[in-house]
Length: 396
Ligand SMILES: C=CC1=C(C)c2cc3[nH]c(cc4nc(cc5[nH]c(cc1n2)c(C)c5CCC(=O)O)C(CCC(=O)O)=C4C)c(C)c3C=C
Ligand code: FES
Ligand SMILES: [Fe+2]
Image 1: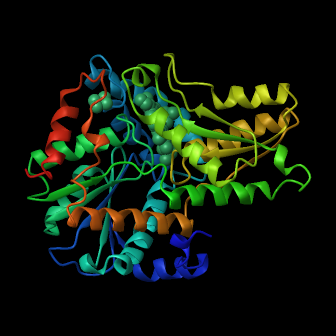
Image 2: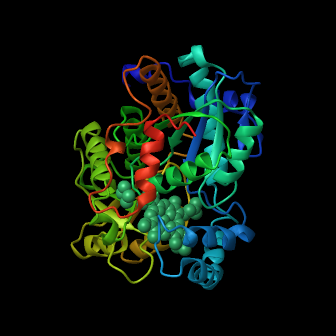
Image 3: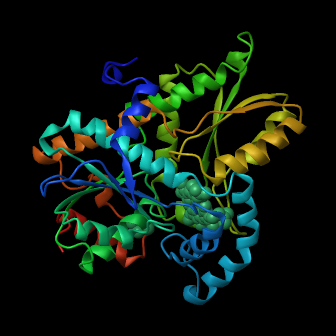
């Protein structure tokens, strides 16, 4: 274990610690009363329907987002597409247990992160996590209202997407900017943790889950097992305007393979395309079939671009692709998602502590240098305004 992880509590100890500290209250993970100077840690993600009944609203919010899916006549078309798609997606959420677990895991991770952060950076303790989802409850708007009610004066927008895409983290930051500019959360000094896909703690957590999955294979077969890293795909129109996501996911895969000592052959493949346009490939499902055809029948699927289980792991990977692979005679496993991984929760708190230290020492600005650069093909004026706003530490 690397020295930075040496103080990591064991799984059970951390679980008990998190449960003791965290009384989940709506969108805020409350564990102590918070003085004015304590930063709110705002965990940004897309969210998912916690219950099947919330599926339609989730899809409607998602298709309404022009930063994710720019549609002609968006306000008219988005509700129609959402309505048509709802029954099929509802069935998928039913099959994975009645909803998306993303809120539960984000709250758990946030409480664990804050408990550790209080020890790692006592100068700003106690820390308090807020969840701000883009398409599901708690929506950014509701979290903004709650932050204002709590009189928050300092906040860190902490993306929960390890790798940056303008369609994911960018969309969440655009939404936060719109709410902030409208004064919905009062006068807050913002800074941003905008990407962390090669952080050693994140890499360690993924690598440990790969190692656990490798244990499912006979020792004599292990080094032949193909690691198929699978990330949510992007439309080629997004890739071709210069979006950094493909590069950053590749960097994560490279870092995990370095950590594993390049013990296995591997590929990075892409899943969850929606609609008829061209998307980044090779597609995960096609890759599984191709490997079966080549006689490479021992495979581990490794989710690399999301921090908890969701419909894409629990339905698409587990129920669709793994079943198809097994029908082709493959021995196919999936590495666990990060979910309640104590190594991962420790990584989140390390990332936040480092950010707080660097920012207060003036070693770094309110966001990364990389976040300041717009995609060369960007035509979205909000992106420019958003970056300018956060660069000024988000003064409204
Ligand atoms: C890093 C992760 C993700 C990227 C990049 C991403 C881009 C992206 N997604 C769509 C369209 C849809 N995504 C949907 C669901 C969904 N997407 C992600 C992650 C990324 N998306 C997740 C984790 C989920 C599931 C949420 C959960 O269950 O918890 C959906 C809804 C489901 C469906 O209708 O199939 C759509 C639609 C686009 C267009 C896009 C890039 C531009
Ligand atoms: S789309 Fe990337 S900065 Fe606007
Ligand atoms: Fe998606």
